[in-house]
Length: 334
Ligand code: PEP
Ligand code: MN
Image 1 (cartoon, rainbow, N blue to C red):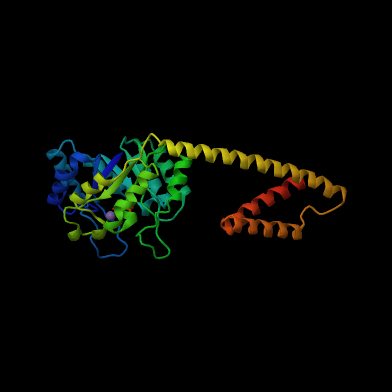
Image 2 (cartoon, helix red, strand yellow; image 1 turned 90 degrees about the horizontal axis):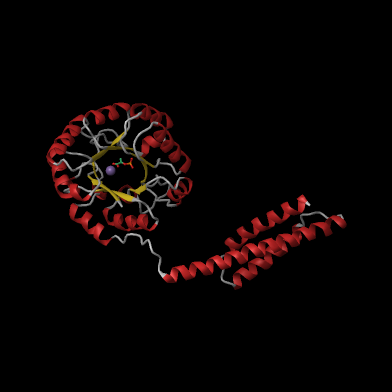
């Protein structure tokens, strides 16, 4: 599992040194924001190039440690290259803008650094994938997707809604792409981070980006969600990594599911074969293919059966809507 951890923002050389001393040897990359995208003006916006100088100093002191930070403009990329940053990521606000991603790609062209692409703020797997493709086309090093949740419209326990179906969709579209999770920005609160990290592992994600600060309560940005180094190590100790070998019980249950599925498919084929016969009878008697009253009756019966079987009526209604639509389509083709 890939691990990236460190403060939301690099606040001082001493803060960074403390982080590297405590985490440097246990993570693939120490993270730290150098330019911070803030919603409102007037807050701490990062130390910029000065923070990159602190990173350089830490690279001298700790030659094994590797560092990554967020870039949002071509100038950020140039400065990171100048100061020897090891990896970069594109933040959520930038991923959503193809113009900005295009400009970053110009600056990144041909540099062999690993690049992470956080999901855009809006729940759009295509937009996320588009940014990833643009970055890959720039000929950089390994590109990874980072799931950090989506701006919530309604109030939720999370700062950003996880909407796990979106990273699952990305994985379906691009199974070759490493997919990491940033539970800190999803959670927005440190007490929710570890459960989210476990979900990410249960979904077979390839790693985690976590915000860790020597004194989270004093942090200049994202104070509520950052973990202390001790909390970070406690989280790692409680995470249950996914098992490669499945328990026998699961294998047996999956065999049963596969059997039921083949019966379902065979039954659907039988049902459609009957529909075709019905189409011929209707044609012979000059009857319309779609008979609304018959359909209402079919649905009513199915909902009754569903209720007796303890099935959700909305679920059965949706499935039967699809089955009926296919039956009508097949009959019209006759
Ligand atoms: C961050 O990682 O500090 C950050 C600002 O992330 P995001 O782009 O996911 O909001
Ligand atoms: Mn942050």
